[in-house]
Length: 442
Image 1: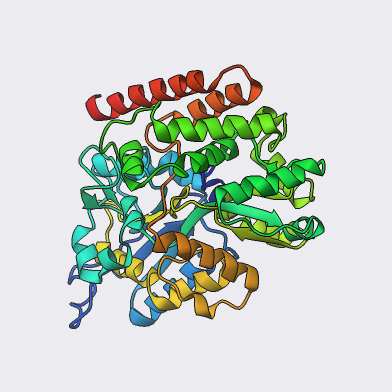
Image 2: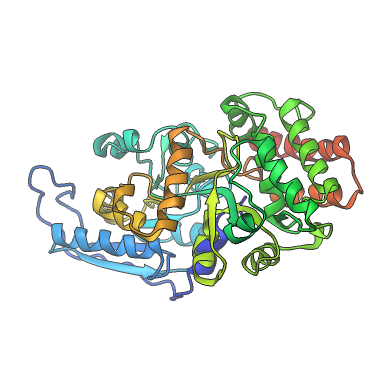
């Protein structure tokens, strides 16, 4: 969902905070040689804003990209200005309307974020660069959806305005020690998944760690919806390709399945009051044998979990909650836009993508053969299997502003028994229709 759907990891990891600094100009460069990208009037400075901690996979990859860029352009001063996710999210519109802007900036993707900047003319279209550098072929299918925005700022069509270079997705983390204790195998179908949960429940163990007060329960619900859906449903739900029937087969089946899982005791009866941190800590401590959540938990588990653990994709699904990661954007007032585009292209190069791969950053164009850590390889292989099926279905709260809170509230009511399935679908559908009308006709 937002990270709360995927972006919580980035916000938490970006602990390095600096005051917003001024960009520098400088004297112009000379005209580039054949194959170069800087124009004759391009300043000798490239200012980069991002919000990744230096020891994160992304932070290490961007450092490699800067190293490569400096080698190619020894006469250019590179200014790396570390922000936090909250700083950029809160201040982007204000900063980008001024005269002191970065040349390239990491930013959140989606209708309410990058889409708004695009619609307001604060970031530059990158369609020509996407053709020039071949981003169109590297970032095909669902990966490219968060890169494109139309004149209303809706993602999925129109001009390229951003470039992703890593990914994220929701899967199932599992405690291998508990699976071994009860002689259980990794399920490959939804029916097998339920059989595994029945076995744990029969032994007095609640099978699934999740949380209803924040994003996790909504992502589990969306997994169950996607178990009955195809790409046309995703395009309708997320991109407004056609109308969505909230009492149709996909949403009804998914919501009914979640209701059943709650009543069967697959999920903690206090789930409505639990937060994502409660879910994660409980799984790490071994209270629950499985946790359905995102790749952003990987680093935390690798550091803190003492039991042996692994990850598999949601059994039977071809579609999964997930998306490209954050995107690089070029502000309209950037002083070095061509250098910025070249830097973006370097982040998609094999050298940089392989750093992401080695560090567990889920590259969009990396070589999994360079990975030596078995858990990182498992995570990356799972992500690749999702990409190979064009399986990124985004997050359930993305379609309309404010929908995150609606999903949380509606599913809490379902979990508490205050609403049945039809009433829950009514609540979800009403808010979705209202938000969609505001976006399209407001």
